[in-house]
Image (tube, rainbow, N blue to C red; front, side, top):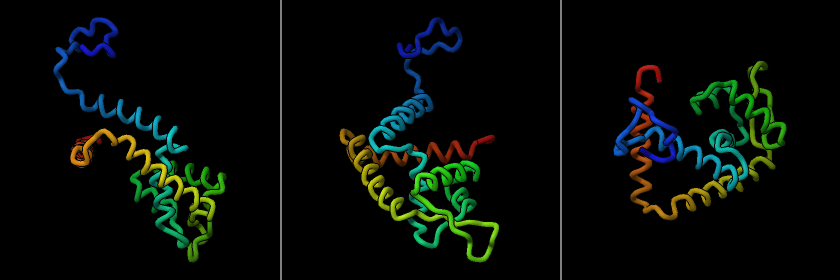
Length: 158
């Protein structure tokens, strides 16, 4: 049994030690990566996809619903993150040209500069994390994780 989990007799949950624990290992790796990411890059990884979409949208901007759809997340979470970006001066809210009930969001010049620096820090972080791993193994890992994501998203109740 893995000593990290040796909290006593697990009874029927005991393992001989040779079993694969993909989900556990992926979750532990995720937790370690996200903590290291925040330290190295200066913000949570959760903002990265949203900032990237805002950067790509440019001056035309993009709405909350479109961002939520593109990210595959709840619009309420996007709204909170956008509010924080606006409060930080990294994004601004603009009225929609034809629909007064909607708003579009764009990066401010400060936000665009911050995103470009952030983007570079992300690439340096990823290079550092993968420094001891061959490019072929990185490619294979990305493929395997994509297959696991696909299988999990296709499961009943997922």
